[in-house]
Image (cartoon, rainbow, N blue to C red; front, side, top):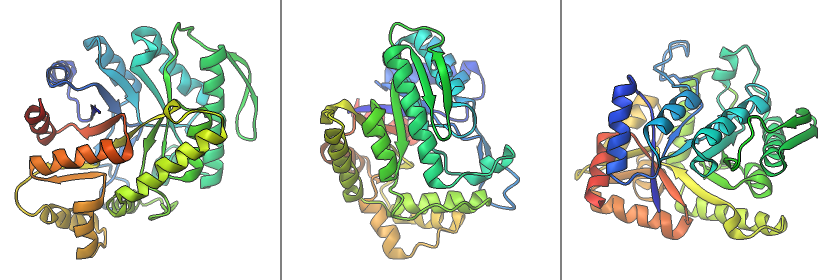
Length: 335
């Protein structure tokens, strides 16, 4: 199983150069960046607590600094603009650094606050997933044949060529937590990034970004390994229905938090519960410490055992770890 780093909070190119060298020395296989515009943590939702990087520019810089790290956006929101323009970013990265290094990650989008910041109303879930499906179909056609024509309900392309041309296209990735998204991955993708299943706690179309973020964290804390095993089984069923083998789509999981600590890890989750007003009781917090695949908390030996469980039960190709001192410490211990 590979380890990838979720990149954020880069100050300048010299700091990025140092990070890239460190990760290569520690055996990290790749770098991921999210496509969020910003995230809020409280207040009236208009004061972003964390402004996010442009994923394509940042990954372009990483590619120039490393000859082997894979480059992934997990995942780009297919609803912000014409998806052909999004796909083009990935193709440019593939032309510069080789398609095997690039994961063209696509998602349906879920944070209504970000849509509102762009003067857009976030469409209902079914419409967003349909747009994702049509985007994935277009990307698959572009990568496989070099051209795409699509007259869909939400997306139209007329003999659009793969531009720029590439000898090896990027790997098409899809991310999400609904069974509808898994069906999209089974039909078109090379890779699926598992998210917390929507049936655990559906996200709302609230414009309060802090509330939406809290609900997303709570959903991840309530998710169990069995939930993701069920999603993996469903993926394989859908792959079979599409005439594809189980190995046709690799998988990954994005770790929400990694904390190496010998004291009770529930203390940290309790603080998280209070900070974000998650409204979780002690039983939920205790369950998250032992059952959620999105949280790696406790002594280093326990975290290593959890990662072994990710490989054995979920069969993931890689886990995405946060860019943090705890991750660096863990990777040194495992080197």
